Image (cartoon, rainbow, N blue to C red; front, side):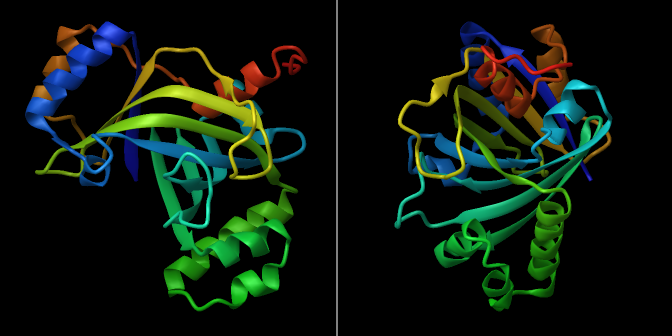
Length: 238
């Protein structure tokens, strides 16, 4: 189980905080070849009643999300990794299970050829994650519903599992594919700083930074805000 704290920053705060954080934490190696950042593109699976959205907007402490994620602007034949993910949260604590799938696996999932999807050889753990993903998909009537993409600047503490990311340029679209939609909607907001860690307390240097900039935790959800903005002309009932 890990913890996730979120903070909403304005552009000057983002620049100042990234500068300070970079003195204590190293840029993520996976982003180095892209100039320090990479795109995060997710396709979220929700129920026809938007159960995940309402669990979040209703303030439920226990909730989950199902998504397929790539680290490219859009799925193409050269996309190296496709991940199926189950993220479960309890307040600020979370756990994330994921399984790497092939392009053929993704096509089987899209076309509901679940037998073919399950027939591929995998480790015991990966098989368990895939089985759980499909169970939620079928039991709860989930379907791919929302394409969400943003730009991420990631940092990590070389002495622990602490991870700090700065996410901006959030875009969303009502979509059922990982291929880029023609006109994604820009979701206006500040920069989201996320802190993920598994220790009981934050490192002293990070706690000092948060106090110095007088930052307060926020319950911001990229998924929740995106769904609301996409439905702004057809408001969801509360």
